[in-house]
Length: 291
Image (cartoon, rainbow, N blue to C red; front, side):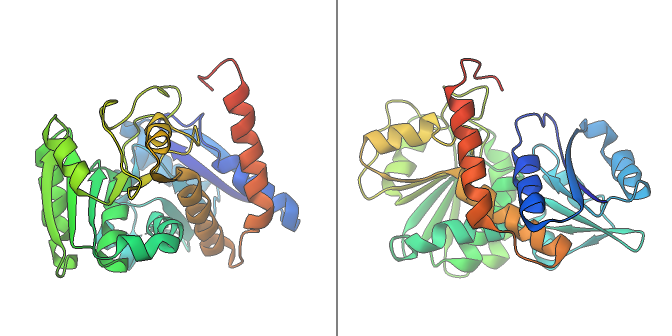
């Protein structure tokens, strides 16, 4: 049995075990995939323990993506550029960090490239997911400007400095998430991306933008949160007539890329997608929204 897993804190909400297990079952692979709640202070020892137990790979989610990048033995070029890891491979007694969030975001947003290229984007957040998304925006799209908004503007400023070498002709600037600065920045943008946990179960009523914000029909509003699939952020944008893209797409594509790195074959997304959609629907209809 080849063992895989996902680490985070908390981790009970993750659908990665269902996604990968469904793929293994469909393809008849003798693999297992388990969730592990790892506290930040235990991260380094935990990775060593997974290696000794013979794990082939791990996915990494909040809040460990940046910390893991400083712990693994080797970093793939993209993970090194991003400064965050969401996929670990155990190879010949060493750990290698990869970042498949970049691939996941690009695969999700590429169908909308015509409206994104040449536009201004607002990126909400400055954590590990935001790092991958900013790198993707700068290297795979041709944006005129990217504005990074974060509760702590100093963290957003650090993010901008780190990614300036990849900016090319794209203007990079920051703002904080206070009103009215954030509202002005979002109104001037075409692409608005949430890379914060705002709206994630169990805090489903929260949104990274003020509830009074009015979206435009030409806005493309993207959420990295996939539980629930229709966040308060996306629901508000949809009511105003904006185009929306849920975090489910990024989740599926990044997972498929991890699967390929570990096993050298493609994940059967056409089979996995309805399994995940059914589970999301089940969770949405449950009286207990804290699952």
